[in-house]
Image (tube, rainbow, N blue to C red; front, side):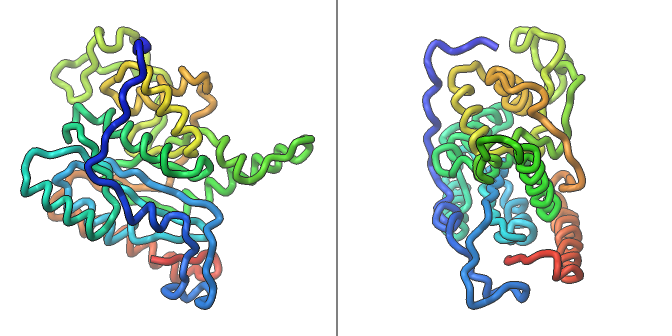
Length: 314
């Protein structure tokens, strides 16, 4: 894609996730967890921040996440935090309610651009900009939609195995990398799906229509489906800086994990697919809370029946 003549201006924020910033790197008080010594503060081994793309009016989805998987903030030595990314709204009553929501929870990142689907690439860039500026490079960054149930046990186990594998592969090297440096070097992991064969959608009645003028090539680069993918903040920062000098593509997942990645000369081997970590629960309706809570309660049942395997604080 074409480069811009000068870097795109940085996004301005209306609201920031103040509570997440205050707590993300603090030791954990285990007073709520029977599996951990209550008289001890537990320093996280590493931290995992999920940037959840949410429509400004999706109060129910955000509440459902906070009541279920968003409650989990320490698991198996890993600190977990969720940030909801929304755009600006014109309705003063809606904005006032969002302000109250963030005053209470401190987990909303609101940028000044319109809160509509066409502006989704800027919503993604807002998340990347904030993470790049506020999080250490060895933190794990995830981009998620607000209609998924996440299995953190499997995600954490997968990341830990990838780090251990690299440590094993580097064991004969003269320059041994630290665990932190290995986490910084991890690739993009496609959790929702990895597509290596799709072409752009040329149906002008489709939500995902891409014109020839916008993207003239008939084959898309390999990319992660935007529902959920993760990477180290180091990769996030590099992609964000590249995005500032690259024309925006409406297909945000293709743009970020495909085009921008390739422009960084990160080859297609820098994308991996792994499964069994999330479930899509669809549109908001009367079954939303039931669906989320059933999956969440299944996770809690696993926690209680495998106390020797993990420690969790909710």
